[in-house]
Length: 133
Image 1 (cartoon, one colour):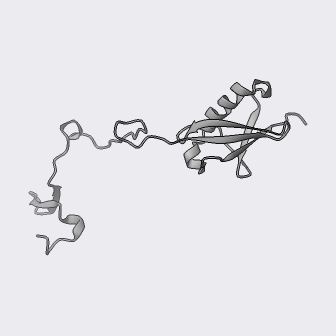
Image 2: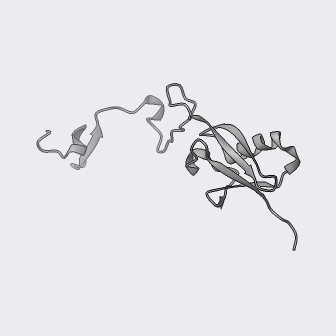
Image 3: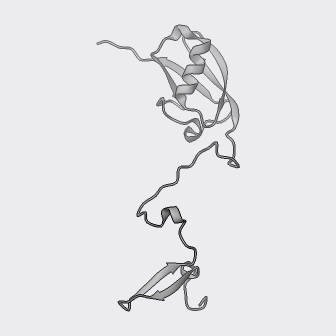
C-alpha cells in the first residue's frame, strides 16, 4: 500500500461503498463524543497544564511631560490594557485618557504584548488624546 499511495494517504484505509465509489476512511476512529458532529473547535489555553508558561519581563513606560521612566513587570500574554492599569496604579493623576505608543504607533488596549513583539526593556510612551475642536 505504501508504494501505491502518496504520503498523505498512507494512514488511510480504502473501503468500497454500495455505490461502487471509493471511500477513504481514517484508521483512527473519532472520539465517541464527536461521532455525530459536523463541526467542532479546540480552544487553546496558555495556562493549560504542560504548556509553555508566559515569560515575565520588565518594560519601561516613559512619560515625556514629566520626563520619567517607570519600570513595570508584565507577562508576555498581558494586554496593553493591563500595562495601562499597572501604570495608573503608580501614577493615578493621569486619569482615564491615557494612551500608549510603541514603535511610534498607538497601541490598542486589547493588543497582546507578545503579538506586538515586545521584548524585555521595551519602552512605551504615554500620550493623552485631546478632546475638543
